[in-house]
Length: 529
Image (tube, rainbow, N blue to C red; front, top):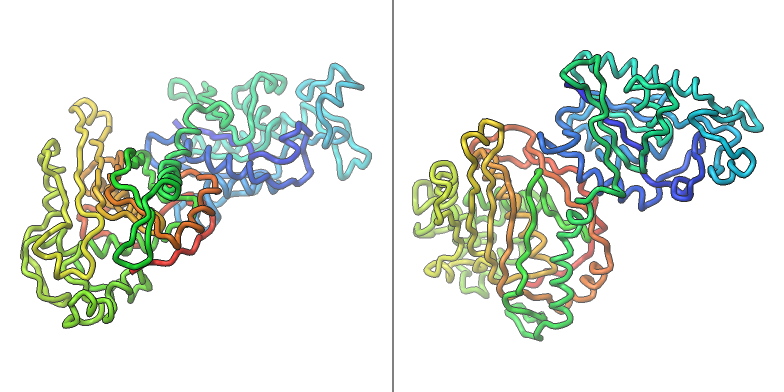
């Protein structure tokens, strides 16, 4: 059955201190924006596990007030992002404004009760303010009639099996709930809507004649919210530990590091509900992550392919100067040797140069991984290795992330019949872990790879685990990382594929869409080569 989702706007200065806010056009506080983004991460997503599935939103309307417009952006992304997600245009509907408080605008209930002890907005409404045209009051009957106009449009959409999202205000959302349930407006007093609260209205027995309140959610009471906003703390705690307790060491680059070997805690990130763990305490270069991963998957070893797409992360290691230092001066600029992609797709083949066609040569480990996940999912040998000792001297840079293993949690035939999919998890071992620049990239890359493989094998991505060897902070990264440690982590974004892809080699950059990524700003750090 179709549903109506009512969403109250986030925290404003007046909502925080209890002042009635009708026509006064206040913006959200930053905590209101953060709360809306965090709660949206819990409720808004893709698929049947999401309370609000963005693939099944057919109509959206909001109040004309700024606080509601900002709440739309915080929960569903900017207009540009909403368009990319193929969400419907948000219609501004004046009928969704808050109760007109008139003389009580900006006044708390406590102050009103000092002169009118029995006042109740649902029973008594609000008197006009000093200027009737600018501050009209509104009676319960007027608020009820306004709600009925809104619900008349909703009803027509529900008759067409369309889901509707309304972004409105505290008191008026309660009026809408009461009238949806065909109760008198006074019944609105029985419900409560916290800031960023969500009410889900549905129907019993698949009948439009039996409206019901399906569920109500509040960020102040929701038990899962804190847990899902803290996974980045693992990373931040490790950085702090290395900076304060790491051993001072010289390194290949000459920069110097503080390092810990084999940190006791692995880093674990949930990938469920299409989560993509892009760190938020600084902006991660997502396009670079995506382009490099697709480059790995293609088997290419030519850094110029990335450079031509304005991705310069391999420029230093592919330069003529660096190749000469590695004893590889006979190679052209950009020829990195048998690095990651070559080992993934042609393990054991004889490497000639970056321009040679290796089709059919060596072991295609990635294809083998995909085949095992599809046909022998309980195999304990679903591994992908980039570490090939016989080829290390031919590489511009030996692999840092050297091995990953995949694990499939299978489902019973009954569960499969209910639409449940096998769960795919990945564990990766990284020998050399640049915590400032490399690790945020690698977390995102292997999480994205897990999502890719899950997509083409009919699984759902479940978890990514990172196991680390030499975990280090370059000395010239300490100061910027200390700045990063002062920042509060935000919820991770979600991943969406714009089309169905069945072959791992068919993924393109434009197939990938990331929703609700709201990181702090960039923190420049120099790459040591």
